[in-house]
Image (cartoon, rainbow, N blue to C red; front, top):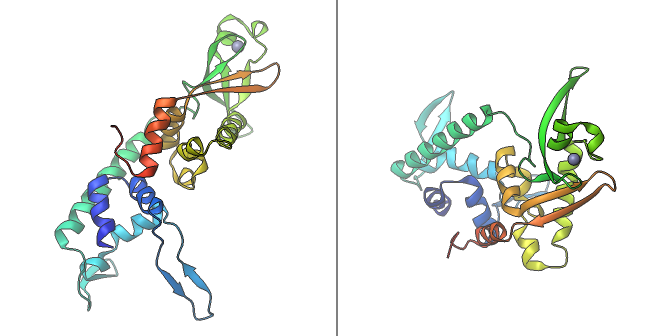
Length: 239
Ligand SMILES: [Zn+2]
């Protein structure tokens, strides 16, 4: 428990702490219910780490009706460390809210390109029947007319899923590549959209889409993948 608090003070990121613990094979505490069913003993999730870090039980206190009372047990974390962790959690939360207010740009912005035109495909959306539809549109087609381009526009959700799926299979014959591709890790599911965008740009330089054949060609980002590999192995990010 103390280790998790210290790790968070060092890394200042729930994601990095979660990855570190899971890579070293740590599991959550296991307990058995009255019915004899086992719970826990599984890999850590970002959200469970967050819940732990916020729990005043570790400084020997208990919450009751929104008021903190001294508990009956010995604290295992000093109040100073607990407070420092709370401050970092609050800062990170504020940052995330600020980022959320920035218009969501689409996971593949700056990555997806139209193969026929060798032009970027930008993210946009329209409203139909009160639903929001997201697309990627070929910049060349938008500027010079849709007759010029066989690709034109594609559903953003489908394209994002297709790119993620082909990234997953890109590592199937190469163990090191597979470990570097964070889409293969359970961590991927816990990432926020902005974090996914960032991770995708570390994995991919470009994804060419050919609207005629429906084919995707990925150009991997070798140096970005090194960073992800080192991060998942718990090695320093550079050097
Ligand atoms: Zn085009």
